[in-house]
Length: 449
Image 1: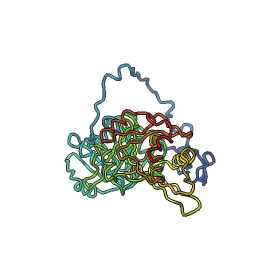
Image 2 (image 1 turned 90 degrees about the horizontal axis):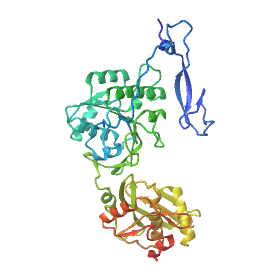
Image 3 (image 1 turned 60 degrees about the vertical axis):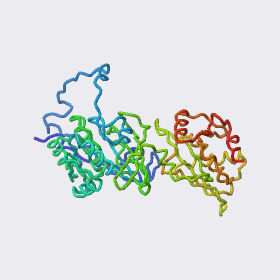
């Protein structure tokens, strides 16, 4: 007798990766969100079973009601989390790995995703069995990296496989305590057409692995690819399916790496983990403020120190500015680690309220260490660094500067002021320049005159 799945009729459609608009044919520009080259091929089932071809349709199957659980008692049994042995990783997740959770880790190629997961797997393999499934590397390549990192736990098992059904059978046989899939874009199932990495394959494989995680209480870490603009590759539903989405940031040619949570069902999304890449793999940065200020020149022109907040964690960052006369008619503004549009606003504030003539000056901003300053509290430090470079006068070497700059030239109050002061004082920065002491930008700039 035919089953319901035997009667499926598949149809190819195209889905916009930006707004999920569906089209029957590929088109260059999405008619809904106007995004170019955003359509991705997908396959859906449009078939209907013929009358009398099967004995029962899914709608007519008998189901039984379940008893819901009262939330009044759910907090009594707190789930014990798995500690990875890497404090920076556990901080971002929120006190460790939750059993039965699915974590999606993404980042640029070469940033250190496989290295980080291998180190986590080795630490957890001291107490439980860990299965590392790689569809991109052979077992010999994984063993070579493990040897270079001096990782040799016997409970750390590696498998080179990209077929989903084989992976599920292996999981059932080995019964590991942690599963790592590297990467989800190369895994494919024989139940669906299409190559690995297509929307249908990625969605279906993730759903099957999610069933394993929730039914067996085994946590799973998926490694995901990113697109050329840095966003997570694959369908948007992938981010909705998993419990946690982690993004590994940083330039692979620099020493620092930042781990952030874009989504976290079991903790805060505002924490950040900081690592340094060296010959021994990824090393945690316990005191990032000292690392970011290492090598700073004394009395450097165009250099300002600010206290940035990442979640509940403050650390000192150096902001550098270079102002030079433009050789062309249109001055250039460039920012590395700072929003370019925000830089344009701060330059306009300087020109209007501090009477700085920057119309024929190129302005370059760099945040040392590969850090990205997104909060408005860094406005004043950027503004002061520009003024220091323009006037060719250094700022006080032991001054910490933070404050939000308004369009009227005023300084606004910022959050976590006490934490910023405490972190600055710990590293010997006794002089504080912020909205608490200076109410206008002009007053803050007088120290340069």
